Length: 75
Image 1 (spheres, helix red, strand yellow):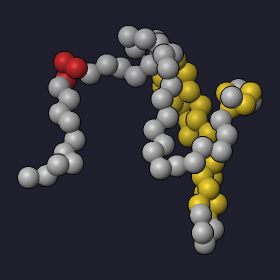
Image 2 (cartoon, helix red, strand yellow; image 1 turned 45 degrees about the vertical axis):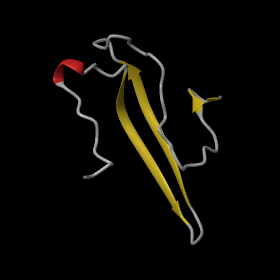
Image 3 (cartoon, rainbow, N blue to C red; image 1 turned 90 degrees about the horizontal axis):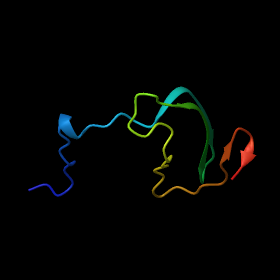
Image 4 (cartoon, helix red, strand yellow; image 1 turned 180 degrees about the horizontal axis):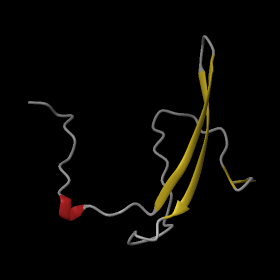
């Protein structure tokens, strides 16, 4: 029996995302000991969502966040 099966999500449980991503730019800097990825996401609130523009959750398990900014303002 597999223990890493993805949970089942039924269509009735689906919710539209609070944000839509219009553009993604990725810059990979490959080095022998590490890789740095610089990403830029152009996002906008989804008017069709139950909570338009709700919280943004970044799923970066095992990654080191160096910096984050919104419209040029570092958080």
